[in-house]
Amino acid sequence: MSVGTSTRPAPDLTCYLVTDEALCASVGRSVLDTVKAAVEGGVTCVQLRAKDANGGPFLEDVLEVAEAVGHQVPIIVNDRVDVFLAARALGAKVAGVHVGQADLPASVVRRLIGDDAYLGLSVGTAEEARIAAEEGSADHVGLSVLRSTSTKTDTPDVLGYEGCAELADLVNMPSCAIGGVTVADTGALVQAGVDGSAIVSAICCAPDPGAACAEVVAAWKEARQ
Figure 1 (cartoon, rainbow, N blue to C red):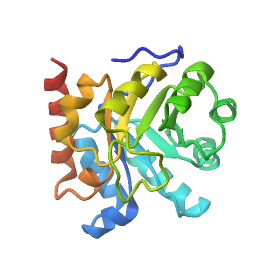
Figure 2: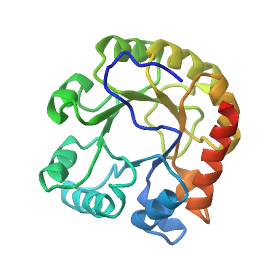
Figure 3: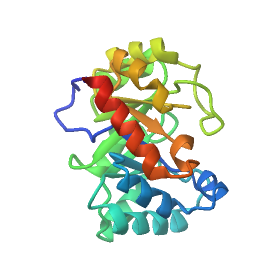
Figure 4: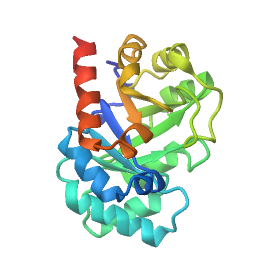
């Protein structure tokens, strides 16, 4: 497992669910129901992502999920620092924020959210990984993307296992791969020095999200032995 340049801890990235409301709805579930099932299956971190939602409705969703499972698993808010801060101001148990390269700079986000919150950062190139390592604002990174998917369209070239290994080494902090990741990738990701799987479709669209998460967690446990 990578040792970060930051003194702050990172969440357990083993099975990192990134939610997608449309994908959940496509199989007849809400985001909340999907997250609850994932928590029962052992998901280790949940990122709530709502790219096209307005702040008010997204805040309501964050509050709902945090109320239900925030005491069991870290809840990370994607992109919207304002929604994270509003949720905390209302007493919700939200754990941190994840930002991309086109969002607010990680150094600024760190000042806004404080040192007690998790801060994840997407990196997709060697230069982005070097900057993240040198700056030290983030606790962990998402390596984007392992392979091309319909849910991650604003990314640089596909990394593959070799690219993930290169960036994980350069960034020198806990990392998870995202982009079409399935349980079958676990062994190769462990060999690449990656710390976890960030998964969207394979959990959101699963007939049983809990079972899907349990399978991922078991695969990582076995691959690390």
